[in-house]
Image (cartoon, rainbow, N blue to C red):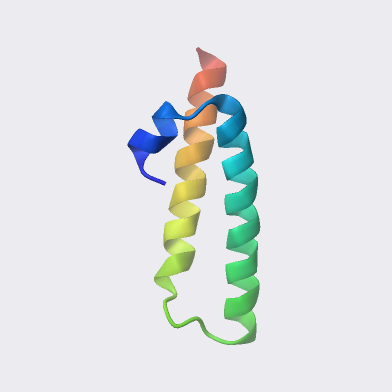
Length: 63
């Protein structure tokens, strides 16, 4: 997800997206453990999107 999409989404949507992203990341990680992924950069990009979503949720809680 892009930062602009994250800012426009509601809190409930972000929590749902965060759960989906964490599930996808664990699936990628498991698949990479069994046999190497064609594009291991997917792991990094998934981690970054999880961090972006989590940061936005934290920022909203503080405000």
